[in-house]
Every structure is written in structure tokens, then in C-alpha cells.
Image (cartoon, rainbow, N blue to C red):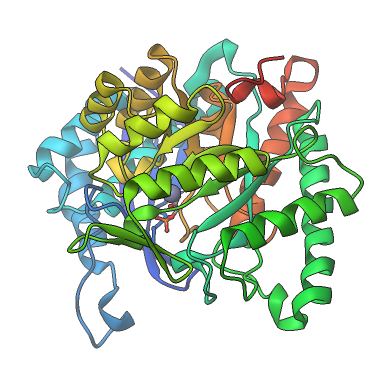
Length: 432
Ligand code: PGA
Ligand code: ZN
């Protein structure tokens, strides 16, 4: 009768994200607990993502207000969820999807639904008196993720001329998450010194994800600088730290002419593919995300055939955390990794399903933030819960990024001797 997990209230309210844009915050109260969650927001969004509902009232927040999404929580979603058992995540998510009635959550808003979905899980965990990673992952959740730390920002995340969006370092030589974070922070500082020396003080302003946004153009310049920064810190590129790229190629693609533009030059997809092979030969790059635009499964497949035994080929905009799109990628062999962003698909249970499907097909799942983030740390718990072994959550700077790293430190501390840090085994060809 008196079930402590029963949802008593669901409330939506406004918050602002790391770019100052309005976003949705949801709080779910059960008889015995409380969970709150905030929706993040991307800038280089895939066209197949769940819909972010904005008010489009130019008089407020330049049209980016989220009052409609919040009203949808309070007037439509809340009455439907009150009385349900907060542990029934799959049913609750399906209920919201059905209530919305559109394939991409355009009516109620993916931003409204994702905030509620995550808040439900947190409320259930709190009611159970469990940490979120334990509640979601059960007793086997104990793998801390290797962080892919975006320390040079480009593309739409930065005001420079670097076309590739993200240049990341992964501290694979560490034997704990704590040590990995230390290594990456030290490299971040060396990089800062180096950039200041080479390009002057303006070069160390940071982009949306906390990485530096130096006045560079060519990817080789960024990668070469990373090699130098790693060495200057006293580490060895390729063994202590390895590199990852997010090209976010949909942003570089000229659909009319069928070419990609990188550093002022045009590349066909075949030329771009050869270019990637060259970069992987020349630098310790172990992962390339969105190397081609979001509809070109075939090009992804060719790159995976060429490099899939040496690096992760990661689909972000390609899959948009969508189970159907992932299935197509699996059937084709389009990639060997998938980026997982809960707000791309809109509900926690769908995102967890994508991770499961990926793991079943021996693909890596990388749990990821968005460029517009908040203090919400759910993704840290989700990474541990799923034992995904990989997380992408920006540079070790800016509070919305460090919140996730600090949460992972906390989880590692709590797991104590049980915690496991996988290191280089999460990348192909490097199984130790
Ligand atoms: P977004 O970019 O959050 O701006 O979409 C992140 C990414 O492309 O991985
Ligand atoms: Zn991406």
C-alpha cells in the first residue's frame, strides 16, 4: 500500500546552461526520496536528434526560452506520472514518449522529457538509498571511464579557425581515474604555457568545453602542439596519453558540392579518408568521431574497414543515440563505437538500450556531455553504471565539466578497492 517509490510530484522549472541559455530542470519527488536533473544542449546538433522545444518568443532570451517545455512538464507529464512507481523507468519513459506522440519528441520537447526521465531515476535511487551508478548498474558497476578530454576546441565551439571541433587527450597510462585526471590536468597546464609562448596570451582563452581556442588552422598544428605539451609534462605520447578527434564533419560538409572544407582546402570523402589514415600514421590518434557527415554510413564503413583495427571510429551525429540508426550501423559495420548522449534520444531507458546494443555487438559506447552543460552529473554515474570504460566530458576546466570529473573522483573513492580503471584496453589494437 504505502510504496515509498510512488511518484508524488513532478515539477519543471527553468535554469540556465553553461552558455547562459535557458534549459529545463525537473524535480521528481517520491514518498521516500527526491531527484532533480537538468537537460543539456548541443551546438553541433545532429539533424536526427530529439527535438529541443524553444519558445521562439524573440522578446525573451532571443527566442530560446523554455517556458513551453516547462508548462508541458507541469500540466501534461506530471499528472500522468504521479502515482506511478519510480522504479519502472522503461514504462515511465514509454509513457512520456506515447504522450508526446511524435517520433522526435517535438510536441512536449525532448528537453522536457530528458530532464524528467533522469530525475525519475535519481528519485528512485534516492528512495532506495543508493548511489545512482549502483541503482542503475547493480553490483557489477565498478569500471571508471577513461576520460577523452577536449583540451583544444575548434569548430562551432570556439571563435578560432580550427575546423575540427575537438582535440582530446586520453590518459591511458594511469592505473586509476584519479591518476588519469592528474596526468590530464598537468598536460592541460603545459599546453597553456606552450600556447602562450607560441601565440600570445589571447591563445589561452577557452571554448565552450573548457579547452583552449588558439588561433590555429590546421589539425596537424593542433596535434603537434599536443605532442609537445605531453612531452613537456614528462609523459610519452602514445603510451601515457593518446589522442582522440571529433571532426563533427557534418559542419564541414558542403552538400551541394559533395565536399568537405578543412583549413581552406576542399576534400572529397576519399581524400578525407586518406587524410585520416595519414593523421593516424603520424600521431597517436586512437579515436575519430564523426569523420564524415551524418548520412554517409558508407564512408564510415570504409574508414572502419581501413582503420577499425587500430582506432575507434565513433558515430555521434551519425547515430544520435537512436536504437534504429545504431542497428543500421551495426548491420553495415559502419563504426566500432557509438557516442551516447541521453538528450539526443530523449530518455534514459533508450540511451541505456543503445549502450546494451553496442556492447552486444562488441562496440564501444562513449558516454558524453553536450557543449551546453549544467551542474548535472548524471553522465558520470551512467558511465560507471554501464561499465562503458569511456567518457567524454570536456577539459578539466569550467564548473559544468569539472562537476562530472569530481563526481567520478567521488565514485572511485567510494568504490575503493573495487574500482577498476581500464586504460588502453578500451582502444582497438591496444588490449593489454
Ligand atoms: P554538441 O557537440 O554538444 O555541441 O552537439 C558535442 C559533440 O559533437 O560531441
Ligand atoms: Zn561529436
